Image 1 (spheres, one colour):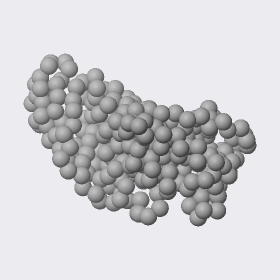
Image 2 (cartoon, one colour; image 1 turned 60 degrees about the vertical axis):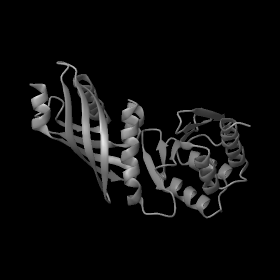
Image 3 (cartoon, helix red, strand yellow; image 1 turned 45 degrees about the vertical axis):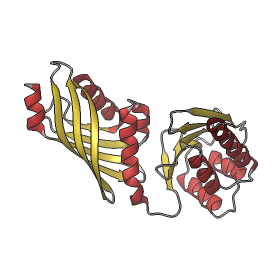
Image 4 (cartoon, one colour; image 1 turned 90 degrees about the horizontal axis):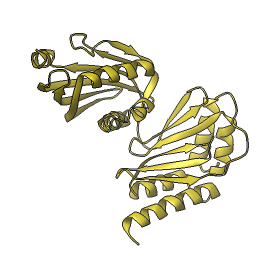
Length: 263
């Protein structure tokens, strides 16, 4: 059996054993990580789990969920209680699914590399649970790295999934895309203006872990779309992370160097 075939088999085995209630979450995560899975999405509404590997492969598994109906109102406390019961071994996965559906959860994302799970309600409500065994702040650098990776492949949906609904973005108005932006709509407007102005890549050199804040240092390199001029500019991006989601970003770059390239 090839490595790819073995990894697919591991994913399928984990899915089947989970839904049979014969395997715990910690074991699932350990096995999936060994199989190259970096995240997976459980969608209660369509009855499907989708697994994403670091190599770019996607695998799906049908859930065949029916009862109970997903509640209209999201109850984060009830979701948390189901999670705690599962962590203590008192709630097996089939019961966990029933409880979280009854709590208005429409699905959830497990970020294995980021060591947290995001549970979703019908109106965009979110409840974040970090994996046991480490302080949440130690995951913040990984959250930032996931945002950069998603933006690098221009997967803006994946970027927004890591942003709080009321995220704030700031960059100096000296550059054409600079301004203050709020919420997911604001983030989309920021990215639209940025990508319209430049074709760039980031070379990140260092991450400073300051607990709730993360500073990313490096350079942005690329081409100005209007003129075709190239640029190579130092950057310092300051991120604020709370409950596994980005709540604020300040993009600081060497403005004089960028403006000189634009002249």
